[in-house]
Length: 224
Image (cartoon, rainbow, N blue to C red; front, side, top):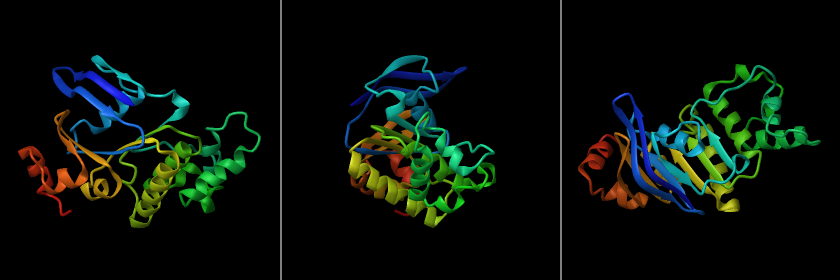
């Protein structure tokens, strides 16, 4: 179980994130929704440790090797796609084979020898996911993992994540700009506005019977 306690993130006079208490349980998938600037990315960065809160603590997160983090725009180095994934296997004799397996899972096996910096945005997201899933993970933190992918790429990523979750019963936390994706992928939905949790619950509760006027206003722009 991962617990966020008294988390506060400020930038000058602006509150970016204000979360008194939030818990993520093992074996559950969490979809975080909200408008741009609502704090979704900051929440993941605080959890993984790439952003430091002004106050508060994150407890229960496993060590780095057991926590996989995928930023929204993962970096692809100018060497081969295969070598981009091999980087996560230091001093492993069969790392080329393991890296190729990870690439094939995300549909990039045919591009293993291409230069990483020639990939499209959606392909880079899948490359980043291959790096994350190449190692065993207890926690996955994914920032809009399909925001740059086309329909086929989205299907590949969602199916892979569902399979991974069923095999590992990890904690899966992902942000998304598409409520329909949260409906397909999440056990619990968390709606953020101005860095605060406005509403949370099952996808059916949040999307079909939202209690808060802010949630209702946000969802009025989407067909679910």
